[in-house]
Length: 250
Image (cartoon, rainbow, N blue to C red; front, top):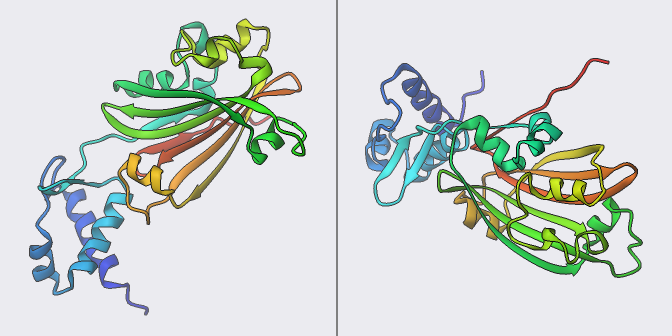
């Protein structure tokens, strides 16, 4: 029988104790020194175990105070619900829909700029990569109850978004998709490509996660008929999010 690595065994034991209520939500875990003495291991071994529990969303770190059992509920992202016409009609954009489902307070910092479309964006928008194409970029940092949980960068063709409310920080009720539809680009469907990867330095800093923790990346392309009208690169903290998709059987 292959024995598990010490840090895996420590993580399993602490996970069991959290599950049994030995440490409840909001409780402080033993210090690193206490865990080193208890399990007879080096500090890095303890840190690896804690990092695993943190990646699972069970534990969070409070600067200068130690490790605590998480009181946070996962953020549920209902892909079908958040992109629906009904949500836009009720004045909610996608992130606002997530907040309504989870009953947490949302806040968003937005930077809007114009730049040449990156090569992958040209591909999604069916633009000739051999030419320079200007896009409107909406770069957002998104917070749930004050904590950064998601980063999103949207690219919209400048011939559509230029000089419109899509170049303002606040796009108004229903978000960018509602403004697109007001301009005659009725959204018919979206595609999402979901993957995981290590965070880039800026992402790790903003999301307050170690470089070893994966992030969830979603590339969403919104279509109005046969034309792609928006490409959104979305980066989420994997310890906070649950992605839920409805898949019809027909």
